[in-house]
Length: 215
Image (tube, rainbow, N blue to C red; front, side, top):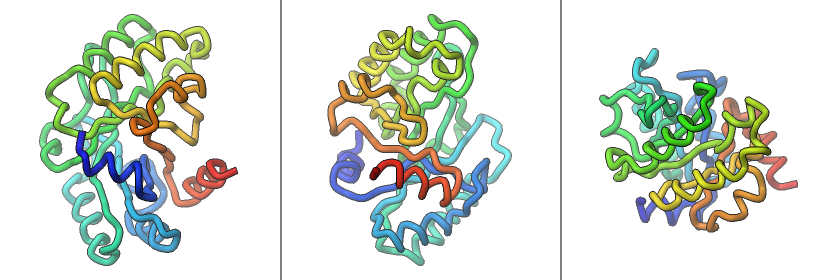
């Protein structure tokens, strides 16, 4: 894991897990820079959705970030992406962008209704050496189980997967929007291995989640 990134999430004010109008977000890259500047936020970690077949230009997305970073030079940025888990532990990511990013978010929004395959696929993904040189974060852990209404009876499985992720140096997101993973699991994760994520698709959504965080 990047020591620089570790220091950032430990010592700096940051925004992690955001989406822009390049995909399903409503706010522009510039909107996030302006919000961060006005609210004394030092770091923005961009994590746009990707798939193997992109319907937007990732290079344009990167240039948009760099262009705005020149206008807001005091804000540090990391360029990342959110890629979905596929059966067998494959990552749904276009190979032509992997040399251009710092952070890879592992996500599971939907999956075959096969809990054993789900678990095995995550285990293979966490242990895959192809991604070991990147900062890796498991975002909204347990969302798939929650969507199927089987999260509570599978907390042991989720805990085991979290442990395997940690043993492979994968960070665990505390998803503030969905309260995932459940409290009893996130409390078992060492403080320096947790990253707070907003899963925001607009500045307004980010503001709402931030208010919830500080209640």
